[in-house]
Length: 195
Image (cartoon, rainbow, N blue to C red; front, side, top):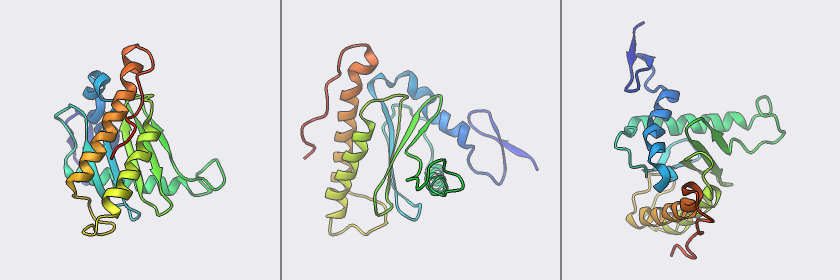
């Protein structure tokens, strides 16, 4: 079988659509150099069956994943999260799954609700306030998606107000990290209210 070259120069088989290690680092590699203004690269929401219902890229990098790649990555993360909860794989009994995946170029944080919805944030290494950002995005989801009478459960979220509120939460995280990465003090905190 012959392989095909990806944008980052790695080789892959024809039947494999994504080189996950290469693509993931490709997604954030150029962003990490200019990331002092944006510690959050992207926000993902995956439904309980592994379908991507929201994705927004916040990096300034123009080379991003296409739609098919984002769907595949969301599905793979859902599967890895489910596998990590099994007793045969988890080093801890009754594990709640992967909450943080650390790589050499980025961190992937995950918060899972009791209903199985996963909120994920791809951020700079050691970014502060990401857990709080995940909770804020969950609050926005509860207020602007779940309370929307036109939103159908488990379907992609296509509400302008929802996207605006998520952007406000991401900007709050960016403000919290501004002093952290520039060598200054505290960096402030979150806005007192998103609404």
